[in-house]
Image 1 (spheres, rainbow, N blue to C red):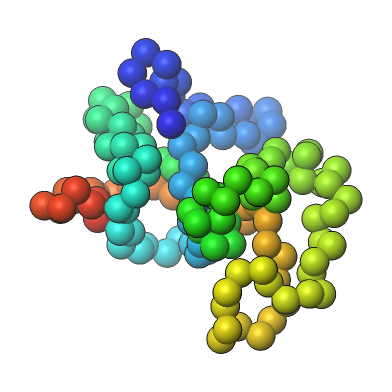
Image 2: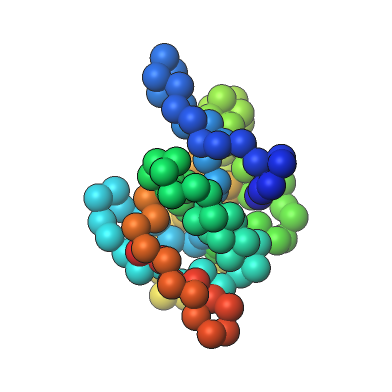
Length: 144
């Protein structure tokens, strides 16, 4: 995540519907549009990202971030495997192998889940707005 002189503000291109320069939070669960949720942020890279978002001038508008589902969360991302590399929408559509393991079991250890899964980069996401943030004594952030 870029901050300081390298940071660019979030912008919306009304001709394409694209949100540009949106900070992304890649986690192992799906968020639902319109739902309010208390988020526990404990990983340093994301704590930094949210602190940077909140340090923007208060008059600069809503504080948005993208919540992206990545099977296995940060553990999968840290694996370095190609399938967890974040791709653009066009790259995802061009990837002929995107459903190759749909009928097989997940490579993640999920003994209680019996449904087939596709373990790969985020393809499901939600635009979220930060309404409130609390810093905990141990460095975590609680975000609404």
